[in-house]
Image 1 (cartoon, rainbow, N blue to C red):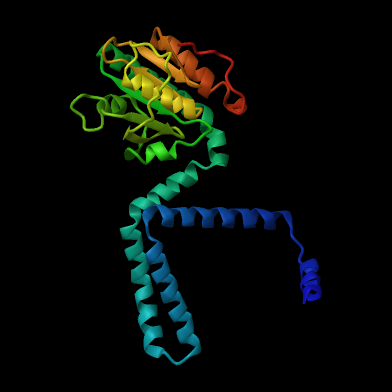
Image 2 (cartoon, rainbow, N blue to C red):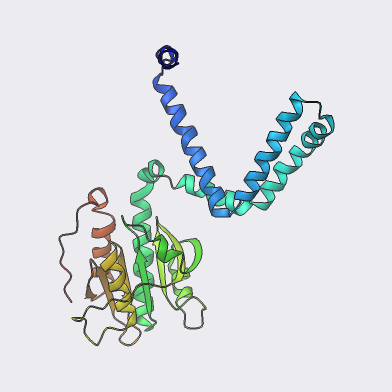
Length: 272
């Protein structure tokens, strides 16, 4: 048996394009499985598999009525699935557009635009003394914290950020998390730091930013409601930022200039 299998494998010749073909099909199957998992359509996928099994079984055994019924309903089932899962399909296509090999071509511009929008929003919130906390994901995923908030999956714009942190907004409590250049969620709960060296002038938002950066490599921007100052937290340390230009410079250094060396920790030291 093994000899026959080995002989059959030796007869198979893989060309470079065959490997590309296999990689593309594997990627599409992977995205499809993620779509099913996120949309909670596992039971529907099982039901569709049962229908396919009955259809093919009806071709080998005399189940003419079953074959006719499934054949006529198949087209309507496809359209019904598209209507029911249009938002999930749109999200899946957006995820394909944000695949690593695609993001590599557009990452610089996206990161630059993200930094500019965050800086403008933080400066405007600081001028109004509106408290805010914005966390930006880097290498370590923030999925657990994203799931604790309200999912948005929106484009990063200063208008949206300002609207989220308005005192009368239902999303102003908690943090905004930016993932892959998009606002993944708002009103997210972050772990509070228990660092005894943290001064009394720092409130719960600063402790939340410290708690997040103590556990992950994320960058957190905090706007103080009491003083209207901006702070930047990284690696469990925090520093006050004097103006928007300094904030933009630090964010660009962390998210843009060092994007090809993300496995290295930044050299800057953020002291309490």
